[in-house]
Image (cartoon, rainbow, N blue to C red; front, side, top):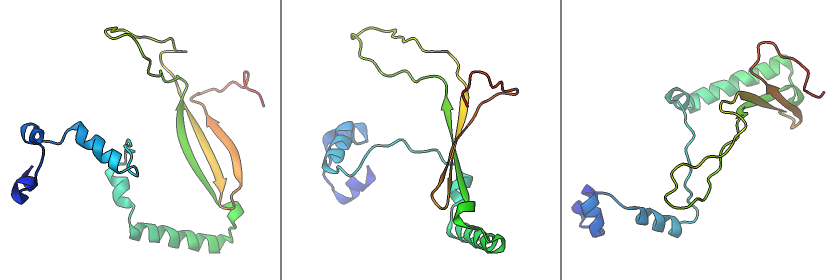
Length: 147
């Protein structure tokens, strides 16, 4: 709130009282700027963010180039794998209920689920490998699964 005072910029009276802009201000900004959207940011560790810089990226591609030349690799032999976790418990959707109703429940398949890892694999040529599912088991039994 120092900038408006220093510059004699006119601001609504509620901003003086609350010492901040209100929800209406954000709503109007979003209405005037349809190219903006409200998103939940993806969590990134400080180490990962600081490692993503020009010298590190240049070093990676220099090393990759040396390996590609040395091994005579083609686009068909270079793969990228990305993993994602998927829980076995469904998310409970929001529901509309009568005002004043405190406890709202919905039956789900189980209380605690397991995390299944799904891997997507694509080659530099654009061909894809079928998805790989990794189940959290010590001894996997193959019954119950189709080939």
